[in-house]
Image (cartoon, rainbow, N blue to C red; front, side, top):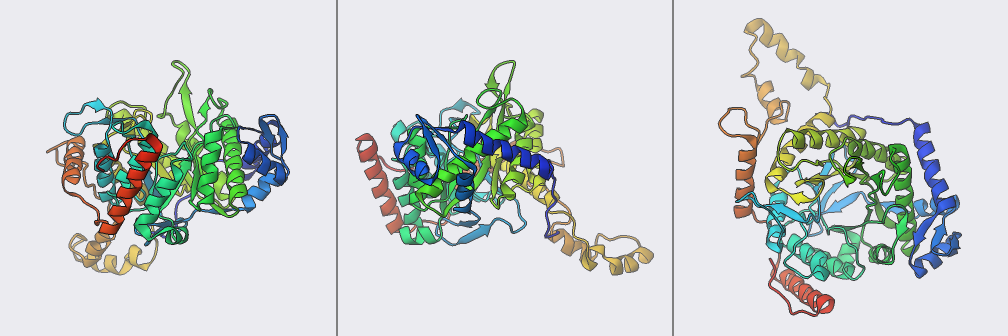
Length: 480
């Protein structure tokens, strides 16, 4: 396989310039709605103009913000050991996060998830070889709402050894607890700052709104030295303009404003550029995550991020289908392929369906196989003496013309010269969905990550007990 990646350039440099110029103008002339006095004061000190609850950000401050953030390129496993870095030529993947429903593996019933479901889903994702980062797939409903982010993170870290992220956090009160959990797993806060095994995502509210809790959370994340993903999600024609060019400009402005706030709180904050633009079906006014606009937006966002030296995290495995069927497959593959070919660093959405409303564990297994196909395609084709195999052809063609038993064939198959499925059926014995469901059940029952040390488990128990007491006033419950 080649060391280079294929590249699809959706827009020209001049077209990207125009999107970025529009974003700069939005920040300078329209500004952001910022309901946070301290943040407004910090931005005013940088040269922004404050007009009531709106802060207008001039181009010089935008440039300052970009100069004072650091790309989040290096990822570390749960124990703090090195996992991978963006820019190594490989495409990375993570699952959807915080979904409010799950399809039960045994009954097929669509229901509300529990912390046990978070733990089960995490073990499946931990076992899948092509999922690089794990996020709490589900939002558990058997804990108080005030404890949801902390409880789902607790279930996560006990069931994966991969790099991980909390689900998107909406309250600054949650940040210290999830960071303490991550630090406990990798040797303490100083070790965490050196090799952060977790990042945190926070979502500004489109269009260009930064409520108090959102802004406070961004500041808390930055000040604790946690890598920060900004997740604006403008809906075409609803919370963003209906045209992709305009929505990309708005999203770009929202991301830049997020980075400025993070940099003001902690110069040098690590950040990732994210794209979550989604279309609204004009016939129903419902956000529909199956349209090709998601993949197109992700491809262009990748170009915008990379020209600023930032990694890009785009949604890709998305569908509005309500069952695993041809619609589900075609929408997911289309929206993953487009940003993948554009050079995106990491794609989101594994195991999510129904316009990011439900998690399906057998779909995670199927997505893992799709990822292997994507990696095969974007990896390109190596052309060298070994792959051209001239000496092999000189020998085999005059002899009998059969290459199957040649050592060259064996070695190249082992290197991946021919893509081989793991769950797709080529025999007619069982459907791919049936095989994926059986595999998911097997992983839930049998897979366990490397166990955490006893002292780390005690720390996690103490953090959960303290969080339950301080956030809800309730006594501690036994973890999943």
